[in-house]
Amino acid sequence: SSNSSSSSSRRRSDSGGTGGDWSCGQRRDGPAGGASGAGGAGGGGRFRDAVQRHDGAELRAANEAERLKAAEASRMQYMSGLSGVEAEIAAMQGELRDLLAENRLDEALDVGEALRHTVLSFFGEDHTVYASTMNNLGMVNKQLFNWDQAIEAYSEAVRVYRKAVGPRHANTLVAVENHAHAYKAMAEQRKGIDRSMLLDNARELFEEVLALKREVLGANNVQVGLTMQNLGAVLRALGGERASEATEMIEQGMQMVCDLLPANHVVVGTCLNNYALDLKRTGRFEEAEKAYLRALEIRRERLGKDHVDTLVTMHNLAELLHTQGLEKRAAAIQSEILAVVGYDEDEDGAAAESERIKELIDKSKEQ
Image 1 (spheres, one colour):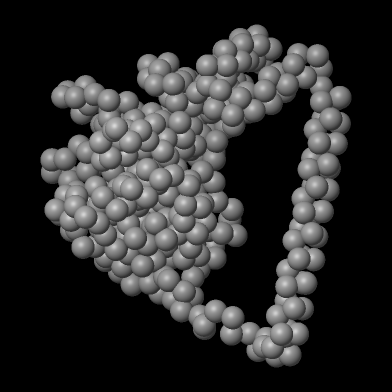
Image 2: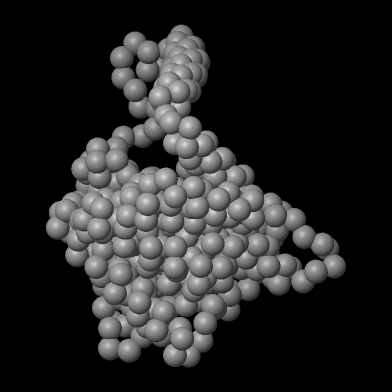
């Protein structure tokens, strides 16, 4: 994920608090619709407001159309200036992006492999275009659960970026963090010593990224907060002597993001969901429920009730309620999920809900 510097530097109006302040700066401004002046009250004012909103929407649509037209013209101009091989590479990159957007992963893998061979023969193995290609291949293989291939691709992307642009470059940091996520995801499919070794690899990479982000971006930055949560999740999974550090890391990362982004930002919803998961694992059920409810409110508002992330938070909340023996409330939420995703009436409701959520998560696979 990415966040603009303006978003990162913008602070919410209230201080938020410390510790388990899951609310993340809920708005404290005046009542909705409390506009003052001639247009703020009465039928005429509401009519003018409606007309202005309609005109504004049309203007935004026209501006977006012009932007897309200009972008296409710019792309065509760029393509016309490329050599034959470069134009072929650019076209393959575009095809790969389209296939990924449509979740056509097997086809994306074929195109990605063909792209790798073309890029390697034209640019060589130490060029940033090759690093970008390997990063994309890592992403495709990860989504296909081709773990060894994903790890190998991400590792090669990191090697090239470190050599070509240095360890502190933004592209290098992204590749290293992708590499860490792949180890973490792979560990979730393993047990015993294999799982511990993979988690330890993820920990080392997340710690490297966190240290470099603090140097490059400063200690108080949205990207720093997100990496703190990722590292905290790995520490929690590893357990042992650093388990107590996990909750502190996740909580501090969550609070940092909440302080730096608007209260209803979608990334805030993600951080709250992650925070709630850790609270549940440590037995802080009441706080976890509050965090899940706030995350759900944000995701419903920003993503919609049918979005996979919204449904995942609903599922997490239902699981929390089930853990506490609150079966009636849990079943009501599971029924809401099934109303969206559908199921066979002969199936067990709870089992069907869990299975549908797993399918949705598999189809949607970030960070």
